Image (tube, rainbow, N blue to C red):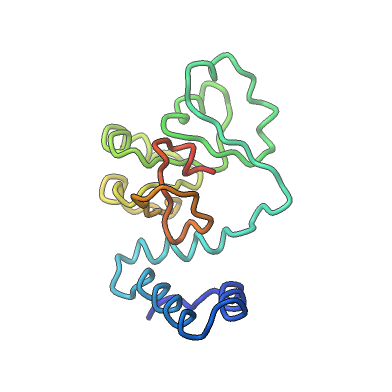
Length: 170
């Protein structure tokens, strides 16, 4: 059984789109959340929708993983919502700091450091290309990445990597 069309989207689409296009949008949604899809993808899509507006009104920080972070005091960010990228986890013990979320979509990073990534305890956003590398983990949400450029507003439908993991984190 496919996931229901989210109520907010149903209202938006039905108010702004002619009936024929609405049924096509509904069919697209059903196709994207096909009942025969990998259950990990279906679960990830559901979890992504549940995160919509989870931190509305708050602020968040996207933290890279360059060497300059070793000299930075990350303490002020401990009570903030933070997205860490790629190998940020190397600082977790050293700085007594952990991000709220972890993002990795680079196939090479996923392949080379899958064991390390599995050990991260925060919520992880991992490209579907890494599903078989990081395995089943209740803290992992798999995201589909698209080929075409653009800033996609709804992560459950896929995100363009923009040649950098930071783009996906946004």
